[in-house]
Every structure is written in C-alpha cells, then in structure tokens.
View 1 (cartoon, rainbow, N blue to C red):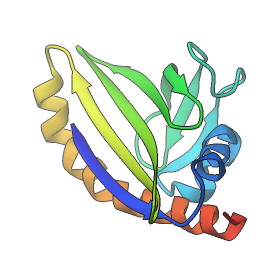
View 2: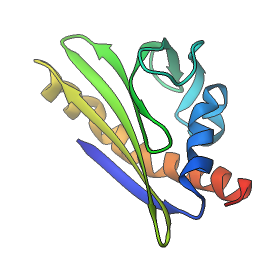
View 3: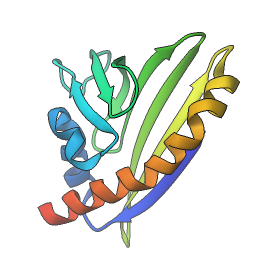
Length: 138
C-alpha cells in the first residue's frame, strides 16, 4: 500500500465531516475534478469520480466507520484500486492517513504505472484537507 500521513489540528469529527461532504471533495483534493455519490458516504454506496487526468471511474464505498475510516474502490482491468482514509485522535491533533492499494492479477502493473503519480498527489491532497479542516475550527 502507498501511504502518506499528516497531523491536522482539528478533531476527527471535523475532518470526517469534510469526507462526508462528497460533492466538495474537489475543494481539498486537487486531483478530483468531479464526484457523485448519490447515497452519500455509506457502505455499498455507488457513484463515480472524474479525476483531473484520466477517465471517469465508477466507485463503490466498501467500508465506513464514522468518524475514523472510510474506503472507496474502483475496478481497473484485472485489478481493484482502493483509497483508504484513516483518522486517529492524538495529543497533537488528528493523524490523517491516506493510502492507495491495488489487488488482483494486474495489480503489479497498475502500481507501477500510476502508483508514483498517486504517491506524489497524496501529500498535496492531505495539505488541502488540512487547510479546510483547520479553517473550520477544532
């Protein structure tokens, strides 16, 4: 799994509220152009996500534990790509960890082809989330 983490000076509930506001993901994730998840951030909800570069992808929420975790997956040819988001309250603030994983027969190929780009984008996404969460208050 490719992971990056950051401490955000806000409560997990504040950060999770930004996750739940699915239509506004592009405000803190510059890699996301548009997203639609009509059922909201609930287990088994389905929708789509249009990245800034690349085709629109169908997404499915595979797990949600409010206010500490959610995971979304998308199918690629011979591979499932997942985006895992975890929040942990610490004495310094909320530790936010974003991870990307690939599983399936062609996972090695996709990890090699798009993994480096995703890894470079995760810190930028976390910084955007940090700015919005800290502006919203504790």
